[in-house]
Image 1 (cartoon, rainbow, N blue to C red):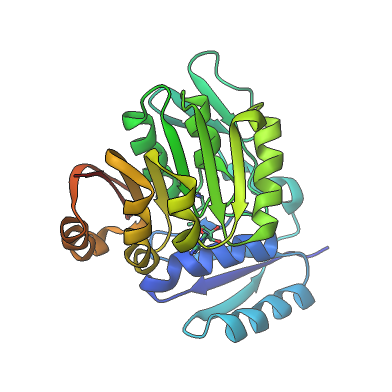
Image 2: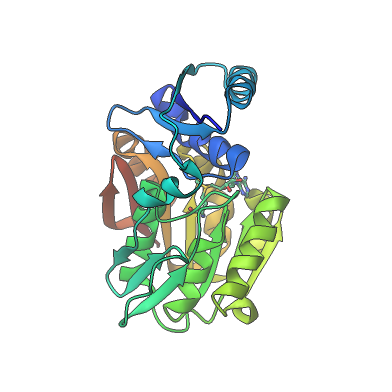
Length: 274
Ligand SMILES: C[S@@+](CC[C@H](N)C(=O)[O-])C[C@H]1O[C@@H](n2cnc3c(N)ncnc32)[C@H](O)[C@@H]1O
Protein backbone atom coordinates (compact mmCIF):
# COMPACT_ATOMS: atom_id res chain seq x y z
CA UNK A 1 0.00 0.00 0.00
CA UNK A 2 1.33 3.45 -0.86
CA UNK A 3 0.21 6.26 1.47
CA UNK A 4 -0.39 9.85 0.41
CA UNK A 5 -0.09 13.04 2.44
CA UNK A 6 -2.66 15.77 1.83
CA UNK A 7 -1.54 19.33 2.66
CA UNK A 8 -4.49 21.57 3.45
CA UNK A 9 -4.05 25.33 3.74
CA UNK A 10 -7.31 26.91 5.01
CA UNK A 11 -7.85 30.64 5.56
CA UNK A 12 -6.76 31.41 9.18
CA UNK A 13 -10.33 32.06 10.35
CA UNK A 14 -11.44 28.61 9.11
CA UNK A 15 -8.49 26.51 10.32
CA UNK A 16 -10.29 25.20 13.42
CA UNK A 17 -13.42 24.21 11.51
CA UNK A 18 -11.47 22.57 8.67
CA UNK A 19 -9.24 20.74 11.21
CA UNK A 20 -12.30 19.44 13.06
CA UNK A 21 -13.84 18.32 9.76
CA UNK A 22 -10.63 16.48 8.76
CA UNK A 23 -10.43 14.65 12.10
CA UNK A 24 -14.11 13.65 11.84
CA UNK A 25 -13.76 12.63 8.15
CA UNK A 26 -10.55 10.58 8.44
CA UNK A 27 -10.69 9.39 12.05
CA UNK A 28 -7.02 10.35 12.37
CA UNK A 29 -5.16 13.04 14.26
CA UNK A 30 -3.95 15.84 11.97
CA UNK A 31 -0.51 17.34 11.92
CA UNK A 32 -0.47 21.15 12.31
CA UNK A 33 2.54 22.89 10.80
CA UNK A 34 3.85 26.24 12.08
CA UNK A 35 2.84 27.91 8.79
CA UNK A 36 -0.82 26.92 9.36
CA UNK A 37 -0.83 23.92 7.00
CA UNK A 38 -2.90 20.95 8.20
CA UNK A 39 -1.56 17.57 7.08
CA UNK A 40 -3.65 14.43 6.87
CA UNK A 41 -3.13 11.05 5.20
CA UNK A 42 -4.93 8.70 2.81
CA UNK A 43 -4.17 5.01 2.30
CA UNK A 44 -3.94 5.24 -1.52
CA UNK A 45 -4.10 7.67 -4.43
CA UNK A 46 -7.84 7.16 -5.00
CA UNK A 47 -8.51 7.93 -1.31
CA UNK A 48 -6.36 11.06 -1.55
CA UNK A 49 -8.33 12.21 -4.63
CA UNK A 50 -11.65 11.57 -2.88
CA UNK A 51 -10.56 13.64 0.11
CA UNK A 52 -9.36 16.46 -2.16
CA UNK A 53 -12.74 16.53 -3.93
CA UNK A 54 -14.67 16.58 -0.64
CA UNK A 55 -12.42 19.30 0.76
CA UNK A 56 -13.13 21.50 -2.26
CA UNK A 57 -16.88 20.80 -2.09
CA UNK A 58 -17.34 21.36 1.67
CA UNK A 59 -14.63 23.87 2.58
CA UNK A 60 -14.64 26.43 -0.23
CA UNK A 61 -11.63 28.66 0.60
CA UNK A 62 -8.98 25.96 1.17
CA UNK A 63 -5.89 25.32 -0.97
CA UNK A 64 -5.10 21.60 -1.16
CA UNK A 65 -2.28 19.51 -2.62
CA UNK A 66 -1.24 15.88 -2.27
CA UNK A 67 2.08 14.01 -2.37
CA UNK A 68 3.05 10.31 -2.28
CA UNK A 69 4.92 9.09 0.81
CA UNK A 70 7.76 6.60 1.14
CA UNK A 71 6.37 3.08 1.71
CA UNK A 72 6.46 2.90 5.53
CA UNK A 73 3.90 1.44 7.92
CA UNK A 74 1.76 4.54 8.49
CA UNK A 75 -0.90 2.52 10.28
CA UNK A 76 1.36 2.56 13.33
CA UNK A 77 3.73 5.42 12.45
CA UNK A 78 1.05 8.13 12.94
CA UNK A 79 1.10 7.28 16.62
CA UNK A 80 4.71 8.37 16.98
CA UNK A 81 4.02 12.10 17.18
CA UNK A 82 1.31 11.71 19.83
CA UNK A 83 2.56 12.15 23.38
CA UNK A 84 1.10 12.31 26.87
CA UNK A 85 0.30 15.94 27.76
CA UNK A 86 0.51 17.37 31.24
CA UNK A 87 -1.65 20.22 32.62
CA UNK A 88 -0.69 20.72 36.28
CA UNK A 89 -2.15 17.71 38.13
CA UNK A 90 -3.84 16.42 34.96
CA UNK A 91 -2.29 14.16 32.30
CA UNK A 92 -4.03 13.29 29.03
CA UNK A 93 -2.48 10.21 27.47
CA UNK A 94 -3.24 7.84 24.56
CA UNK A 95 -4.00 4.25 25.56
CA UNK A 96 -0.76 2.85 24.16
CA UNK A 97 1.43 4.80 26.61
CA UNK A 98 1.83 3.90 30.30
CA UNK A 99 -0.08 6.34 32.56
CA UNK A 100 2.00 8.43 34.99
CA UNK A 101 2.18 7.27 38.62
CA UNK A 102 0.95 10.56 40.10
CA UNK A 103 -1.90 13.01 39.58
CA UNK A 104 -5.09 12.52 37.58
CA UNK A 105 -5.07 10.77 34.18
CA UNK A 106 -7.52 10.90 31.27
CA UNK A 107 -6.91 8.12 28.71
CA UNK A 108 -8.07 9.19 25.27
CA UNK A 109 -7.12 8.10 21.74
CA UNK A 110 -7.57 10.42 18.75
CA UNK A 111 -10.77 9.16 17.13
CA UNK A 112 -13.56 10.38 14.89
CA UNK A 113 -14.63 13.16 17.30
CA UNK A 114 -12.85 16.44 17.95
CA UNK A 115 -10.87 16.56 21.18
CA UNK A 116 -7.55 15.01 22.12
CA UNK A 117 -4.55 16.67 23.71
CA UNK A 118 -3.29 17.29 20.18
CA UNK A 119 -5.09 20.57 19.55
CA UNK A 120 -4.05 23.93 21.03
CA UNK A 121 -7.62 25.06 21.75
CA UNK A 122 -8.37 21.87 23.73
CA UNK A 123 -5.08 22.26 25.61
CA UNK A 124 -5.86 25.90 26.47
CA UNK A 125 -9.26 24.80 27.86
CA UNK A 126 -7.67 21.93 29.84
CA UNK A 127 -5.08 24.27 31.39
CA UNK A 128 -7.77 26.72 32.54
CA UNK A 129 -10.01 23.89 33.77
CA UNK A 130 -7.19 22.41 35.84
CA UNK A 131 -6.42 25.81 37.39
CA UNK A 132 -9.96 26.89 38.22
CA UNK A 133 -12.17 23.84 38.88
CA UNK A 134 -13.21 23.57 42.53
CA UNK A 135 -14.16 20.19 44.12
CA UNK A 136 -17.90 19.59 43.82
CA UNK A 137 -18.40 22.01 40.91
CA UNK A 138 -21.33 21.38 38.57
CA UNK A 139 -19.90 21.58 35.04
CA UNK A 140 -21.46 22.18 31.61
CA UNK A 141 -19.31 21.41 28.55
CA UNK A 142 -20.62 23.02 25.34
CA UNK A 143 -19.47 21.39 22.09
CA UNK A 144 -18.24 18.37 24.05
CA UNK A 145 -16.86 16.44 21.03
CA UNK A 146 -14.86 13.45 22.32
CA UNK A 147 -15.95 14.31 25.88
CA UNK A 148 -12.39 15.15 26.91
CA UNK A 149 -13.24 18.27 28.95
CA UNK A 150 -16.24 16.68 30.75
CA UNK A 151 -14.19 13.61 31.62
CA UNK A 152 -11.24 15.71 32.81
CA UNK A 153 -13.60 17.87 34.93
CA UNK A 154 -15.01 14.85 36.77
CA UNK A 155 -11.53 13.34 37.23
CA UNK A 156 -10.41 16.65 38.74
CA UNK A 157 -13.27 16.61 41.28
CA UNK A 158 -16.43 17.99 39.63
CA UNK A 159 -19.68 16.64 41.10
CA UNK A 160 -20.91 15.97 37.58
CA UNK A 161 -20.55 17.21 33.99
CA UNK A 162 -23.15 17.65 31.24
CA UNK A 163 -21.80 17.69 27.67
CA UNK A 164 -23.84 19.29 24.87
CA UNK A 165 -22.99 18.39 21.29
CA UNK A 166 -24.61 18.88 17.87
CA UNK A 167 -23.00 15.79 16.35
CA UNK A 168 -24.64 12.51 17.49
CA UNK A 169 -21.63 10.42 16.43
CA UNK A 170 -19.36 12.43 18.70
CA UNK A 171 -21.65 11.60 21.60
CA UNK A 172 -21.20 7.87 20.92
CA UNK A 173 -17.42 8.33 21.10
CA UNK A 174 -17.75 10.54 24.20
CA UNK A 175 -19.87 7.94 26.04
CA UNK A 176 -17.27 5.27 25.20
CA UNK A 177 -14.47 7.52 26.47
CA UNK A 178 -16.38 8.13 29.71
CA UNK A 179 -16.73 4.35 30.22
CA UNK A 180 -13.03 3.84 29.50
CA UNK A 181 -12.15 6.45 32.12
CA UNK A 182 -14.63 5.03 34.67
CA UNK A 183 -16.61 8.27 35.02
CA UNK A 184 -19.76 7.28 33.10
CA UNK A 185 -21.88 7.61 36.26
CA UNK A 186 -21.03 11.31 36.59
CA UNK A 187 -21.24 12.56 32.99
CA UNK A 188 -24.14 12.89 30.53
CA UNK A 189 -23.90 13.84 26.88
CA UNK A 190 -26.92 15.62 25.39
CA UNK A 191 -27.47 15.99 21.65
CA UNK A 192 -28.53 19.41 20.44
CA UNK A 193 -27.69 23.08 20.02
CA UNK A 194 -25.91 24.68 22.97
CA UNK A 195 -27.97 27.85 22.34
CA UNK A 196 -31.04 25.90 23.51
CA UNK A 197 -29.53 23.42 25.95
CA UNK A 198 -26.97 25.51 27.88
CA UNK A 199 -29.62 27.15 30.13
CA UNK A 200 -31.32 23.78 30.73
CA UNK A 201 -28.04 22.01 31.56
CA UNK A 202 -27.30 24.59 34.30
CA UNK A 203 -27.09 26.25 36.68
CA UNK A 204 -23.39 25.44 36.42
CA UNK A 205 -20.53 26.57 38.63
CA UNK A 206 -18.17 26.18 35.68
CA UNK A 207 -18.99 26.21 31.95
CA UNK A 208 -16.57 25.15 29.20
CA UNK A 209 -17.10 26.37 25.65
CA UNK A 210 -14.38 25.34 23.22
CA UNK A 211 -16.12 26.42 20.00
CA UNK A 212 -15.29 28.99 17.33
CA UNK A 213 -15.41 32.69 18.30
CA UNK A 214 -18.45 33.38 16.13
CA UNK A 215 -20.32 30.55 17.86
CA UNK A 216 -19.12 31.65 21.32
CA UNK A 217 -20.44 35.17 20.61
CA UNK A 218 -23.83 33.77 19.57
CA UNK A 219 -23.93 31.53 22.66
CA UNK A 220 -23.07 34.16 25.29
CA UNK A 221 -26.69 34.90 26.37
CA UNK A 222 -27.45 31.16 26.70
CA UNK A 223 -24.16 30.60 28.53
CA UNK A 224 -24.90 33.45 30.97
CA UNK A 225 -28.36 31.94 31.60
CA UNK A 226 -26.81 28.54 32.36
CA UNK A 227 -24.08 29.85 34.72
CA UNK A 228 -24.81 30.71 38.37
CA UNK A 229 -24.03 34.33 39.34
CA UNK A 230 -20.36 34.32 40.33
CA UNK A 231 -19.70 31.17 38.26
CA UNK A 232 -16.80 30.84 35.84
CA UNK A 233 -16.83 30.27 32.07
CA UNK A 234 -13.82 28.97 30.12
CA UNK A 235 -14.05 30.09 26.49
CA UNK A 236 -11.63 28.56 23.96
CA UNK A 237 -11.59 27.76 20.23
CA UNK A 238 -10.22 31.18 19.27
CA UNK A 239 -6.88 32.18 17.83
CA UNK A 240 -4.63 34.64 19.68
CA UNK A 241 -5.42 37.36 17.13
CA UNK A 242 -9.13 37.05 17.99
CA UNK A 243 -8.61 37.95 21.69
CA UNK A 244 -9.02 41.74 21.18
CA UNK A 245 -12.32 41.06 19.38
CA UNK A 246 -13.72 38.79 22.09
CA UNK A 247 -12.69 40.64 25.31
CA UNK A 248 -15.13 43.58 24.71
CA UNK A 249 -17.95 41.10 23.97
CA UNK A 250 -17.28 39.49 27.36
CA UNK A 251 -17.36 42.82 29.19
CA UNK A 252 -20.60 43.87 27.45
CA UNK A 253 -22.21 40.58 28.49
CA UNK A 254 -21.28 41.12 32.18
CA UNK A 255 -18.23 38.87 32.47
CA UNK A 256 -14.88 39.85 34.09
CA UNK A 257 -11.72 38.27 32.66
CA UNK A 258 -9.78 36.31 35.32
CA UNK A 259 -7.19 34.27 33.48
CA UNK A 260 -5.87 33.68 29.96
CA UNK A 261 -3.79 30.98 28.26
CA UNK A 262 -2.26 30.67 24.80
CA UNK A 263 -1.11 27.41 23.25
CA UNK A 264 0.26 27.03 19.71
CA UNK A 265 -1.47 30.26 18.63
CA UNK A 266 -4.80 29.34 20.28
CA UNK A 267 -6.27 31.47 23.06
CA UNK A 268 -8.44 30.47 26.01
CA UNK A 269 -9.96 32.79 28.60
CA UNK A 270 -11.60 32.22 31.99
CA UNK A 271 -14.24 34.86 32.74
CA UNK A 272 -16.47 35.27 35.81
CA UNK A 273 -20.18 36.03 35.54
CA UNK A 274 -20.79 39.15 37.62
C1 LIG B 1 -13.45 22.63 18.82
S1 LIG B 1 -14.50 21.26 19.08
C2 LIG B 1 -14.25 21.00 20.84
C3 LIG B 1 -14.32 19.55 21.26
C4 LIG B 1 -13.89 19.29 22.71
N1 LIG B 1 -14.80 19.95 23.65
C5 LIG B 1 -12.48 19.79 22.96
O1 LIG B 1 -12.32 20.68 23.79
O2 LIG B 1 -11.54 19.31 22.34
C6 LIG B 1 -16.09 22.05 18.98
C7 LIG B 1 -17.28 21.09 19.06
O3 LIG B 1 -18.46 21.88 19.16
C8 LIG B 1 -19.51 21.27 18.43
N2 LIG B 1 -20.48 22.36 18.17
C9 LIG B 1 -20.36 23.40 17.30
N3 LIG B 1 -21.41 24.23 17.40
C10 LIG B 1 -22.22 23.72 18.38
C11 LIG B 1 -23.47 24.12 18.95
N4 LIG B 1 -24.11 25.24 18.55
N5 LIG B 1 -24.02 23.35 19.93
C12 LIG B 1 -23.38 22.22 20.35
N6 LIG B 1 -22.21 21.78 19.83
C13 LIG B 1 -21.63 22.52 18.87
C14 LIG B 1 -18.79 20.69 17.22
O4 LIG B 1 -19.56 19.64 16.65
C15 LIG B 1 -17.47 20.20 17.84
O5 LIG B 1 -17.56 18.86 18.26
